[in-house]
Amino acid sequence: MKLKDDIVLGNIDGNNFAIATGKLSKKLRGIINNNETAAYIFQLLKTEQDENSIVKAMCEKYDAPEDVIRRDVREVIEKIENLGILE
Image (cartoon, rainbow, N blue to C red; front, side):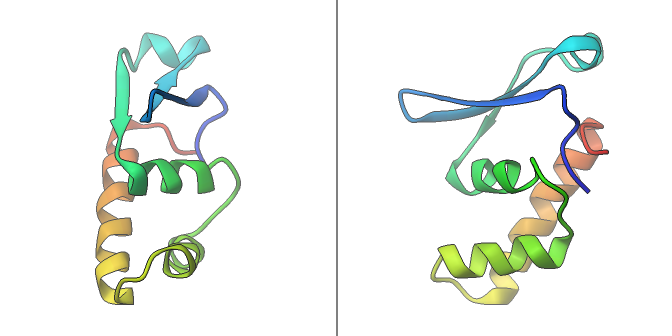
């Protein structure tokens, strides 16, 4: 899975966000505000990933139990899937 090409990630004054551009902006309007964890997952999803590769990257970055990270990753992925912005 990966983000559709029409998703642009940004950060202004420490605030992470994603916005839809191009044709996708007709379906998804507005800004997706991301905390640091979600922003990192979005960044990882700019390239092809699966849940395990995201969990592995998150375990390397954050000092937290793998089961907690896996649960958080699943939650973010489900929200992203519901937005329809994954290929």
